[in-house]
Image (cartoon, rainbow, N blue to C red):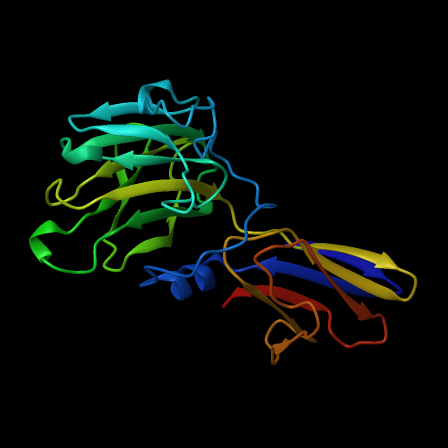
Amino acid sequence: MKQLILNGKRFRSWIIPSLLLITLIGLTECCPIANAQIFNILSNGGFEVPEVQLTDPQPTSVLSGWVAGGNGDAWVVVNNPPALPAYEGNQFIALHPSRTPTGATLSQTFQTSIGQVYYVSFATWTDFDGSPESSQPSITASLMATGGSVLTNYLCAPKTPGWTNSIFVFTATAATTSIILEDTSANNLTDIALDEVIVASPPTLSISQTNAAVNVSWPATLVPFQLQASSSVDGEWTLISANSVTNTGPVVATIPLSSNNMYFRLVQQ
């Protein structure tokens, strides 16, 4: 919780993690999101390093920041519009291309704060249209704490052609956490690709004063948030209109000092 005292009034702001968790439970897919300004905890989440030539795909073992493993096959590929543009940037990962084996993995370990809620987002592409079910492509994202305890397993099994973005959350239980992305497709008869893997922490509200107003701001986020205000912590929460929702950020909401609103919170839509 942050506080700012102006003209004898104390303004407070916070985010309630339980609200974020409750609203995200059951969320499996969403539309593509604009995330250019979001801080990604992961290194090389868009698979852009090193640069690969259009006519010379490379195995994922060359990727900076990632560890390739598993028993399958995966390659770094440059987009080739209009056949298949990357979801973000110029490069993406093709899993079991040319009917090679499934089962490839990519993993990365990153620093986390114990008890902190984190968002995970990644994009998948497929040409699968839902039939036959025996050829369902899928990617499983697993989060593991230091020591090997599994925090969550998230299965992405797209059933419509094109790029789809998936989002889920986990709570860190150790100072470092690993993400493992595995090609868990039923077989190699349907194509699937991976791009733009992001791990990000929830936004933090900041409070400042400009002339006769209070500025409440927060950075870009993976999912839209509403800014709500109240005159007391147990009072009625109302939506602050204007710049109240963002997934591109940053956003600044200006509240006059004459307002009775002294408490602010972000609630995920």
